[in-house]
Amino acid sequence: MKKIKFVFLNTIIIIFIAAGLAFAAEVKNTSTAIVPASAKAVPAIKPAPAVKPAPVPPPASPAPSSKVAPAVKPAPIQNPTQPAAAPVPAPAPVDNYSYNPSGKPDPFKPYIVVVDTAALKKQIVKKAATSIFPLQRAETEKYRVVGIAGDKDHRVAIAEDAAKKFYPLLNGTRIGLNNGKVVEIMADRVIVEEYENNKAKRIILKLRKN
Image 1 (cartoon, rainbow, N blue to C red):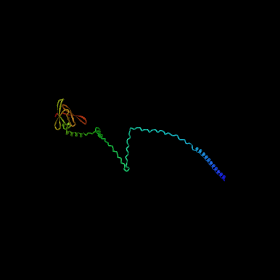
Image 2: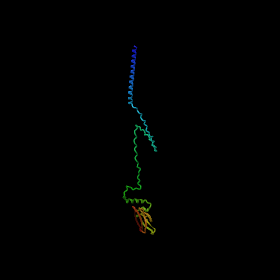
Image 3: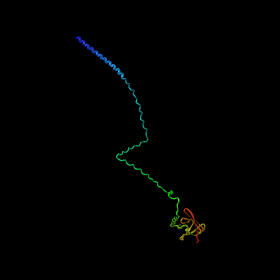
Image 4: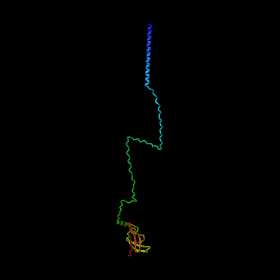
């Protein structure tokens, strides 16, 4: 009976030992098969080379400006509810030109001037009537030479008007309505020079003896 127990125990021990060896061998084979595959599947990763950063150039300093920019005034805030003011019309230009006719010909004056001699004579007679010189109150022909005295170097004549008044005549005496002038006294006549319409003419007053 003891032999049977001993044999049975030995058999069990042998079975356990064999099972343990088989398990150990299987585990070893599995580990060797897995390790190379994993070693081949995952290659060694080399570290990437360090990249040096490019040097950044310093910012260029702005050139100094001699002009100072004018300050910008903020635009006034307009009220949206208030209507925009109407534009003010520009004032009309004022013309300060004034025409000065002095020294300039009259454009409305005709080139040909018609002189009314009758009206001119009436005007002269009217003016002569108020003259303070009695020898210029009538025409030269209205006076009569009633006497001449003196020699060729110095003579004096006596004139008579319509009112029977007598007046002396010398060289240079003014007589008549046209402002005549005694230019020469001869032994028997007196010569008077007048200007009428800018034309000179001579009037001879002969000595009346009677």
